[in-house]
Length: 314
Image (cartoon, rainbow, N blue to C red; front, side, top):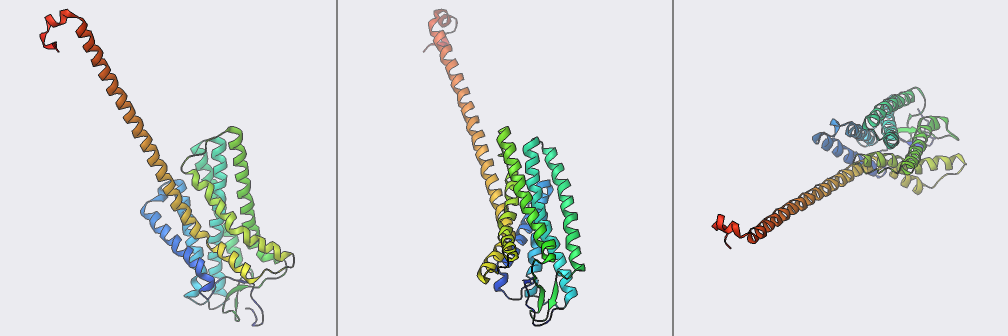
């Protein structure tokens, strides 16, 4: 338990609404995404199942972060439990996105759906084990404690804090770097082999790793800035924290946008197919009509036909 005079560096469960607005928005968005995903049965396909589990992880992460608005943390034991759950969900959500980047690279290199699915299954299992180990490990350290001063779960930052580096900076920075690496490798393969990457499901493989980079880069920059013995302003910290908490909302928006994009592509393909069908029908009608005209001309030119069959008079 922290002494009253100590100041918390990281507040895991804010007690005021102002610090939780973006987390609440993300929580509502991911809850709707989980409900709609279940209704539309997106979990029946492998990539859809992975997206669905990311939505669940986002929802658990956002729900635990905002739980302090409903249940005030009573002690350190509660803090350790709730933060372990939240941190595991956070790492699952972040690391599983790296799976998309890896799968994108595998698909670009092999052009095989089977290889794509094998890559997803293997990497998601490894990421799950990695996230569970780190999440559970936080319980056995002083990564989170109850603060009598803040009345909530906090972590007091120290200079070059080893626990923050181990549990937060290192895993998330690794995920960001690996995601960028997969993008670069994929771009190299696509350029070298001149591959057309327009498959519908590749939209998810491309965008979800990018969310990690967008949401976590500002926070990682702040940690690096602090390591140089500088302290960013409260405004900058609040803005960057809110960007991070929008991760769940961005996930839901990207999925909705991707569905709309795929729907438009399918409609466009169907329209093109119908247009081609109509064109072929018109060609067939024209061909048949021309055959009839030719036949009629031949009839006119043969006088014996009029004698044999008088019905052909014009």
